[in-house]
Image (tube, helix red, strand yellow):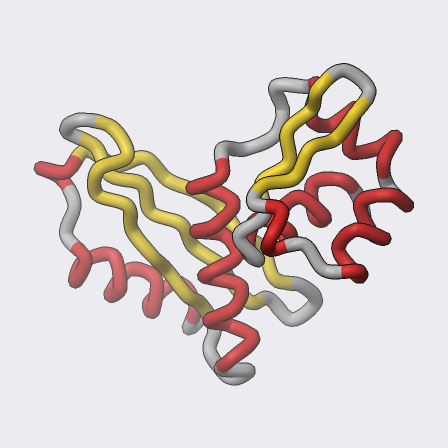
Length: 132
């Protein structure tokens, strides 16, 4: 498990990591378990590097991706899962999608103008695409 996956897993458990120099702080401390503490210690160098970069997605993005992945885990026959965040930016919404392919599950985020969003059209398009 790499740093981004570990950060996403911790985020799904409600744990946020903060870099403080060469120290990693986790909040809330009450959410930590022996297992999560061990994972953080084992991956400390990777986590410090990842937390120092600007490449990590924001916690809301991580949470949406974890949500769609969990939806697919809960329904092994589903070909896709999607969630929206309508207040991601004024006038825009974020659509997070997980697609099951024969070999993997992929996720992506789309930023869509709210006045152009039509959930029915999106589902029809997705169903039509997935049938091929």
